[in-house]
Length: 592
Image (tube, rainbow, N blue to C red; front, side):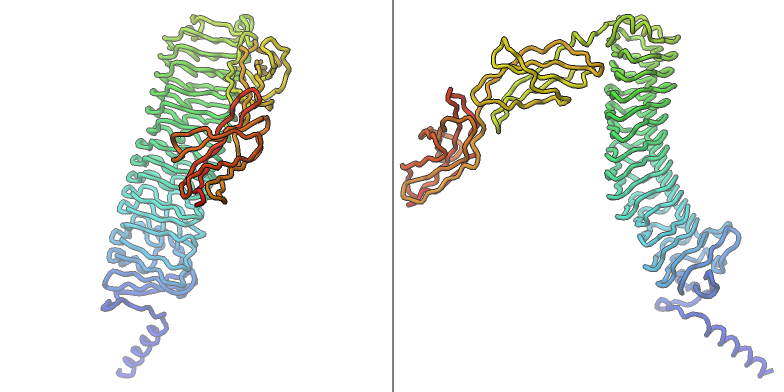
């Protein structure tokens, strides 16, 4: 009997001795231990009586399901903290999330530098308060931290954040994306109702569908220019979201992306070709929208029920406003200019816009669909760029009585007249023209003469709204401008404007004092200047006094007070007395 008992004890010692050794916290005692590796005993677990579950070994943990569970599941209600030791490379699927074993006492977890995988649903329903996901994680399982209502802060470095990763973490207030994060998949942070601000790192590319939907405390989002995609319903019902600047590189803006937010203004980058359905629907505070050239299509309900919208520009590249209700019930909108290339205005596009008074249209418009202007009870004026015959050719479908009852003004491009302003460029003295844009113009012809009555010569054809004339200093020039539309039709001539070209600003002024009482000034020659006026001040601000005239680019002042600091500036002058901009002020201490 004694021999049999001794043999049993010896066998037990051998089994325990074969198990990997795990260091314990001071004073802690082992409650239970076992294996949990994908190869069996390559990874082990030890639970101590202080509530610490230590996972150690080499390689990956096994993957589990909601039914097939690890041995430590029997002690789930005793686990307070999980420590994953160096050497462990993967946390398995459902590692701490069973059907009946819910780890509601688990409040903290630490990861080793060797970890590269966190499995699906690994920590769902736990009570973690914070977590840091290392950038070494290359396999980040879906819904890994889902439904943790105690989670207050998270730092994530993984390149891709999977679907549902932190969804329904309703206490999450602080979220930090480390450099290297590039994409976030659908629903990853859905209903994180305490989150207030988001800052995406440089290099970030894509945020997927519904990622931040129902984050009702979210107020501000900052994107880097590298971001190209904002997915469908991404910020849907983020009812506190006011401050958003869309990234310059954005190309895709998903359906309902900002529906129901509190944004007050938005600019859509030029790379976005389509505004999808419902994108800004029910943004009740949205007052101003800027759409850039490049936009081609606006879809159903895109801006419907934006009841505060007062200003929106529709770019010339926009060809279609689709069915249905693109701008329905934009109550504060008083005027709208449909773009010159628009061919189709969709069903109910502006229906219910009861404040709309003026609509501008162009002759390329072929169809105004049903109810496009239904309920636009204030509509009084239609400015139509085209002939009465072209107006009659538009197919205006039923239920557009306000449009048909409005007064139509027919505008011929040939009657348009550019407005031109002439001024001198301060640095060069050259005459600079600024042209107020003419609706429908694609370029401008600029004519110049040296007499008011001409003859005028075409000096430039340009798409720019500014022109600098390269003339002679001291000469008065006369200008007129004609606008040209895409069909080659010319507008009426602008009023003639004139300006004298001045000499340029004196550059590279230098002052030296190498002899007692003397200051030598030098500068660069100014084209068109016949002489130069030299001025001096004792403080460089006031009391400027003309002290001489030079015909060359050098002047010597011989009456300086030794030891005193003096200030100088020089002005170029033409033969007929036209003066250029003063040089920058220089100073020098007169030699004793």
